[in-house]
Image (cartoon, rainbow, N blue to C red; front, side, top):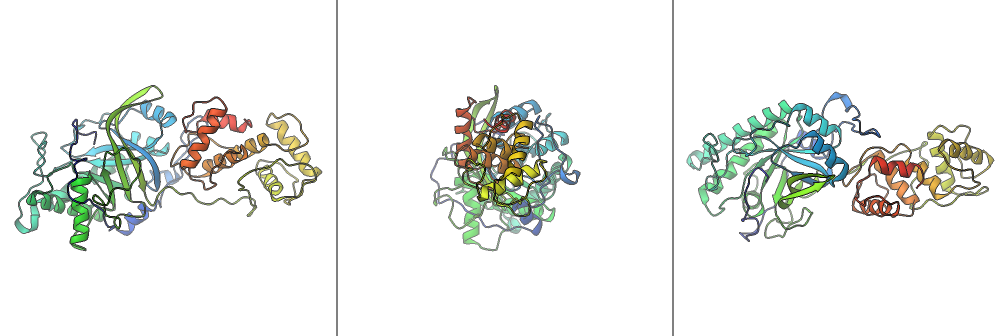
Length: 464
């Protein structure tokens, strides 16, 4: 993690088989993992933040599949805005508590900072770095950050008490920042010597107590560690002592192999644990990245959490079919389902007197002529791909990127299909959509970033 200025060597050493975990969560945690309870979040064309549903922050990170980064010091708002507009990231790890964290002072991390990022679409990964394993040589860092007590008396009762206390402190910090119950809080346990029995067993009881207490307080229990130590520890507990320990709900696996995925070799993570979208993988360690002229030192992550990004289905004009793999040229006298789709969208955009059927008659031609005039198109007898593109992209706004979901993604995917670019019509911005966006951007002379910007929306709504 960026909380440590060091090179993690244990991530690449093939210690014992690696870990996989079981989902043990409360009803509140389960709802959060499925992304339930998310407030409505949108951006206006100029980037202004729309009001959150019910005036409260959404649970975080919710349901999401995409790129994230973590950095010791929470970036300034200006840096976050620049990276929202230009980087592939839509999730960010933030250190909210723990006496062993390097960034004890977080001048940028305020309730306003948190609510602003959530409203703009960022997914937050709150991190606690408190007591570390007793055999971790880099800790304690200060004079007031004890390590996990390895005393085995009463089944490591002292370590369990520390875990409960750290969960209490994390929840207090989270609530003070506006990170609501149902959100996932991650405990950062840096790599340690897994062969040291009391060190390992005390760390396991600490995590067990952290998980229990977070559930009691209504939060989802997350756990970050190196694949070869902490992750293997909890997975071995899952397999070798089923039902004995309360295990993390979400794993954040440090495995610096450069692969943005949430799969790992079976020697590190068995294939039957923590499945169904409850993993984060830190796949690249500390390095500098520059986006939009702003450089931040980060770790890179890939997230597949809350079951992964997904979007609600859309219904238009009481069930008219509007999703097609391509949108053909339409001419007067045609009868086909795409004609009905045009009529539906024209009606939704204020055109009146249109009968919803599959026939392209004079009434539709008149409505089309009015629409073309209003939207800056030259008169024409037929309906072309540029018209389709503008019609389908109408209302699109803000920045969209890998992991984005919802109405704007539906608009984007339909508009790309109208330009002959293959993109699944799912409402979820995935890798195929990103590839289509890059191709479109290259065709129209934009930087091929894969990030949909307000400028790109302008070009789409002008039929480019």
